[in-house]
Length: 429
Image (cartoon, rainbow, N blue to C red):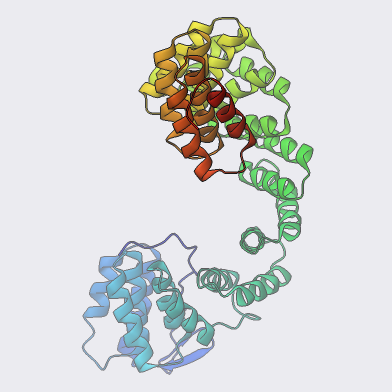
């Protein structure tokens, strides 16, 4: 099973040889035979030097009664070899021999956490970790496991204690930020991210999180400033340009968005930016918002027809109408229909343009497509179709359509008015 990328507790086993043959691991003394003491000492040196096969060979060569510390080092060696099942077996063997062996319990917990067995890992860490005295790596592991196990109260407690004990360790500040975001505590997240930014002001991820927190607090100007800072930290990342432009568009600042797009599309990243459909979509939207038609036309031509989104197609049609090019607007909408990107609104609009061009048959077909879908545009299309039928002296068809429509929407006064017109022109009552 693939291991998750959890920051590990540091696996160390500190052994020292004494004349009486006692070997100590942290504060827990273990009496071992002198022969085993020498093997353990040599194996630990091998582990420090990364000689894992040699360490395992030494440990496997011991012929005397087994010992928890031997299994502990076997577990450490297998962790470094990424043989996690063998590590689990070794740590469990060590715990059977010495249920109080802290390093075995923590080592086993880390391997289980890497396998996303959060509950079992949390149980082990709760048994072996003293939050007021353990080292920072172990406390971080415990807090991370508590978070993954969705024990928010325990995680918050551990993080707060860690920040008091290790105030300069930014790993706990980052975990504090993650916990606040989990709990939608945007005020706490803002405080955490500000502390982190004071320590690492060029971290684009933190500026991105600050923008998120500012947005949640309705501080739009601060959010845009944070997105700009994020971009300045990593100007070659197009996703950061995309977020910055998106923030500007949401804020209605189309002018800055357009200027940014002009600079970007004239610079060294122009080719990559033009190929980024999401970014181009935002820039095109900004140019349309400001009716910057010359720029908008150029940007639309940089997006191949097959890469255009529905919004781009609608904007292209809108631009064509602003320029007085109804035929081009109809082509843009027809392209959306052919690419299966048309909803009821697109069919309705295309039908209306066909009607204005006196292309009655196409208008009727498009209105009929629109009315068979869902939503307000579909209902409006039914009325447009009925009006078109009346205009073409097909009053019987119009009346049938309107009566069926009124069966579903009996309170629609516009439909009743159209039905009255159809009857006045000869449709049966």
